[in-house]
Length: 104
Image (cartoon, rainbow, N blue to C red; front, side):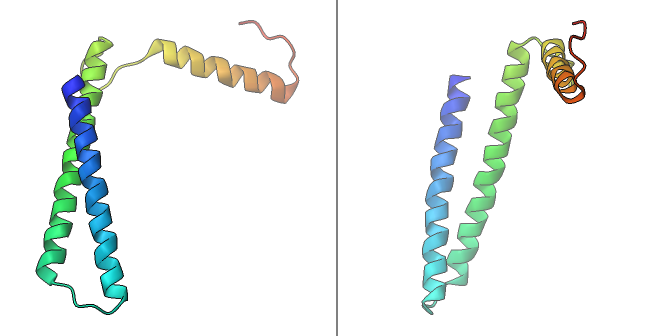
């Protein structure tokens, strides 16, 4: 998990650097300076690659977390989370409708 977290941080830094490069190219274009289509195309290709890597890393992290929780397969029902959400909704209904005390 630690390795995946480090990978995610590195990807985020790379994407930040690419964002800075895109802003630099945009400024050049706005100032009327010539920009190379090759350079722009390569930059956009890099952005697409790193975005895909980011999505894949996030999916791997999500899978590891699911496995750590003991969840398997494509989906699972988190009963604790469902119980909390239902409790919050019931609390809102009580406040909204002035129902007073409703059995838990």
